[in-house]
Length: 137
Image (tube, rainbow, N blue to C red; front, side):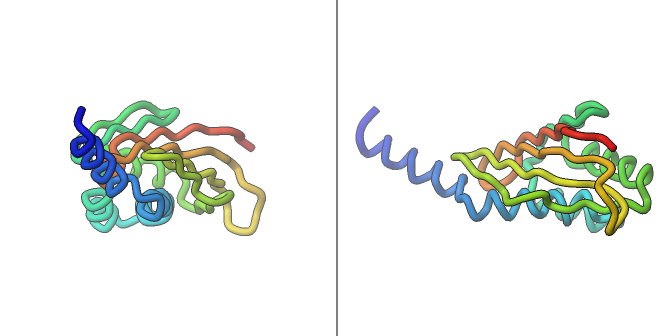
């Protein structure tokens, strides 16, 4: 690979893995997607922030694409009507990967569930999302 091609590749990679954008995506994932109870609003955010071929894997299974992700998020929210998400620390970024710990539970009570979202970002949008539960109350 020539120096010019290598330099262009690095420039393109850095533009799509901007740490500020990855932080923004992880926070939007938590608050504008998984805390949003209006399915139309949530789908608009999903369309802006996730690739069309996004794959999300969590303990309930794996979804493919915007519509499935929106439907699965709605099912989750329907099961926990009084619960709210909160960030359990800052977003950590390494190249095109972002990680955010979260808590889930009734407001002003100890969390019922804690977990971690891991997002792989491609072209400035989340392409793969993995949700791991780390503690259940």
